[in-house]
Length: 424
Image (cartoon, rainbow, N blue to C red; front, side):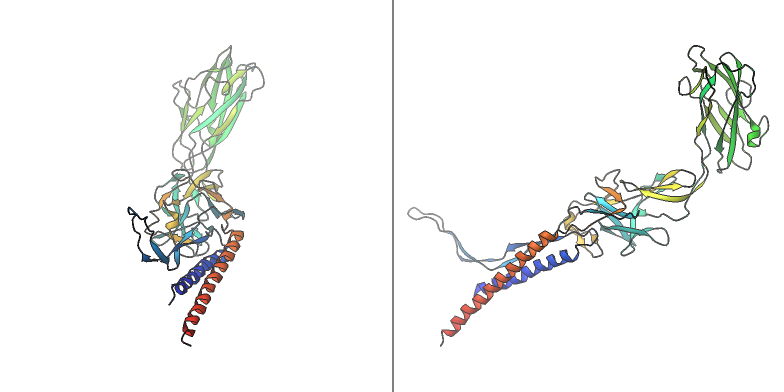
C-alpha cells in the first residue's frame, strides 16, 4: 500500500480532532468563564530511505532522504486569557480579575473554577449554583480573620456582640464671658453602652467657677444612680467631676494634663464600666474657652449595642463586610484564591471545574489582600473567552484541511486502481 494513503487517513483523523475542539468552543460561547481550547499539530514519524554521507575529498556530502508518514495531534491547549465581565447586579456573582481561581470543595476534595455564579444554600453557605460545591476562604471571629481554610458561611440572623463604651469625647467652646457661678450653665449628654449593650445616658454639667476655670460634674441620676456611685481618678476629691483650667491668652485647655476616667456600675446587671472623658488636650480642636457662644458637647463615644446582620458586601480583595443593625460594619470572612505555576496543566472536570494534574503544580492558595495579585469583582460574571471570529476562521481552515486530506486518499486510490489494472 502507498504511504500517502495512511498519511491522508492520519490527516482526516487529526483534523476531525481539531474540529471537535472548535465545535466545543462554539458550543460554550455563552458558558460562564469558559476557557477556549486550541489544537496544534506535529509531524508524525519519518521513514528513512537513505542516510546522510559526509563530504569527501573529491565529492560533496549527501543529505538524508526521508519520507514523512503523516501527522499527529501535538497538543490540545486551554487558553486562560481573561474573559470580558458582564454586570449582573447579583451580590454573590463574582469574577476573578487576574490569573487566579476560586476554590470550591466537595467533602475533603478541592476543585478550582473561574465561574463565580455563587449563591447561598439553606444553611447560609456560599456554594456554586451549578453543583452545590462549597466556596472556600477564611472566616472571621469578632472581625478578626482566621488563617484556616473553611467554608464561607453567612447565616441569616448572625449577631455581633455589644461593646462597652471606653472613651467619650467632649469638644467645642465654653464662652469666656459666661457668668461665674451660674450652675449648669452648659450641659451635654451622650448615650453610652455597657457590656451587655444596654444604653445609659451620661450627662455632664459644666459651670464657670472663676476666670479661666470651669468645673465639670456628672449627673448620676441620668443613669439611674445616686451621688457617690460615679467616681473618677483625678485625685481632686470630687466624685464624678473635676476642674478645667484654660490659658487666659490662648483660650486653650491647660488642665487636667491627662484625661480623667469615670468608674461606675450601671444598673441592670452590666459589668462595671470605666469611661475615659477626653477633653482634647491643649488643642484648638479640643475643649476651648473663647468669647462667643458656648458649644461644648459630647461628640462621640466608642461603644455600641449588640446587632443583627442586615446586609453584606464583597470588596475587590474578596473580603466580606457585614452591616449590622447597631451601625457597625464588621469583617465576616474572605474568599480564597488559588494560583498555579502552570494553569494550562490543569485537568478539566466538567461543571467549569479543574483539578490538579502531574504538570499543573500545587495550588498556591492565598488572598487578594495578602499574597495574590488577582482581585475579585462582585455583582459581575466573567464571560467565555471564545472569539467567534477566530473560531469560524479556524473552522474553515480545518474543513479545507480535512477536504485536502480526503483528496489525497481518493487520488491514492485512483493510483492503486491503475496498479490493479496493469494485470489487464
